[in-house]
Image (cartoon, rainbow, N blue to C red):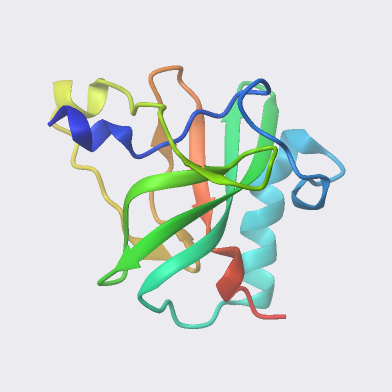
Length: 139
């Protein structure tokens, strides 16, 4: 069951390169920005395979974004999540989801809704993480 908790990547300033193209003017509202953008533009159908993603990470009043990659099978996100590092390589995530999912038997959902993860994931560090499939966003 522990391997189930390896889905979400480490999102710290030391471990990741934050691409300025992925950031909004007000990083405290990055999740709201991408959620609204996806709602306004709409998305193409989700195809099976690897997808480029934007990952938003919120804690308190701060929000950060980074690029990543995830595989989709049967319309669902599949572990592991890969994070784009400072050299442009995709590295496997190492952050773990909160133990509360297992403790309280909260089912983990990996569904995709409107081009984004249908669930906001909570890490052991109490980060709120959402995944946006940027490559299916309509132009």
